[in-house]
Amino acid sequence: MDLFAHLTSVETPLNGLSLLKGFALQYAPTLLLDLDNVTTQAPFRHMITPNGLKMSVAMTNCGQFGWVTDRQGYRYDAFDPQTQNRWPRMPDSFLALSSAAASAAGYSDFVPDACLINRYQVGARMGLHQDKDERDFTQPIVSVSLGVTATFQFGGLKRSDKASNIPLYHGDVVVFGGEARLHYHGVRPLKTSMHPALGAVRINLTFRKAG
Ligand code: MD3
Ligand code: FE
Image (cartoon, rainbow, N blue to C red; front, side, top):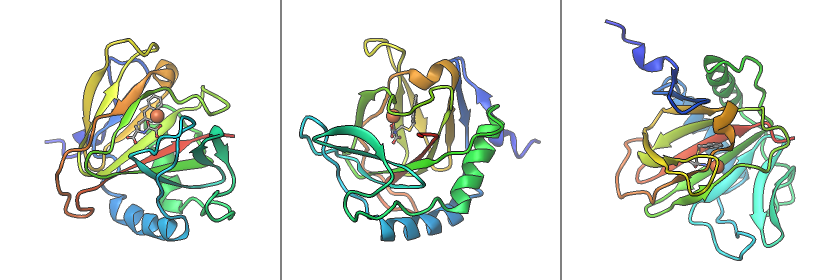
C-alpha cells in the first residue's frame, strides 16, 4: 500500500493547476508557530477595496512585498501601511514549503518575494477575481490551506466562464501556473465548522513572485 499516494502532485484536467493533497501536513505545526510570530508583528486587518467596501477576509503579509488595498487601489508595497514598518521576513518554513511544492508541480526555481496571509472566519468569502497585480505571469502562485475546509471556485479566463467547485482541506497545496495562472477564482462563504488546531478559522497562504 502506498501510504504517500496523497502527497503526489495531481495535474488536473484544468491546465496548469496542480493539486497537492496534504502536501503541507508535515510542515503544519512549524508553519503555525511561525505564523503566530508574523501576525504578532503585522496583525490581521480588514482592508478597504478601491470601491470603499471592507473585505470580509482579514489579511496580513510577510516577505519583501505585501499585497494591500485601499481607496487608492490594489498594489504590492514593501511597507505595512498600518505600522510603516517593512513586512516581517518570510519564515524559513514558509520558503521551504513553497519551493518544495512549486518543484513538485514542475517549477524548480520558484523563489517567492511575497506571502499574502488570508484569514477567513464564518461567512468570509472572496468573490471571483483574477490575480493581475504581479509583474511576471509566467511565475506560478502557490496556495496553502490550513484549518477549516473551504470551497474554492475555479473558473476560466472570462468572468462568465463556468466555475468548478474544489474543496480545500487543511494541508492542501495548490500550484497555479501556465494557463491557470490567469483564471478567475474565488472562495465560497466559510461555513461554521471547527478545526482542532485553528478553531473556526481558515488560513490561506499565497506565495508569489511580485517584484
Ligand atoms: C488561481 N486567495 O489571495 S488561494 C488571493 O483561498 C486568493 O484565500 C484564495 O485568491 C484563498 O488572491 C484562493 C488560491 C489561488 C491563488 C491565486 C490564484 C488561486 C489562483 C491565481 C490564479 C489562479
Ligand atoms: Fe486570487
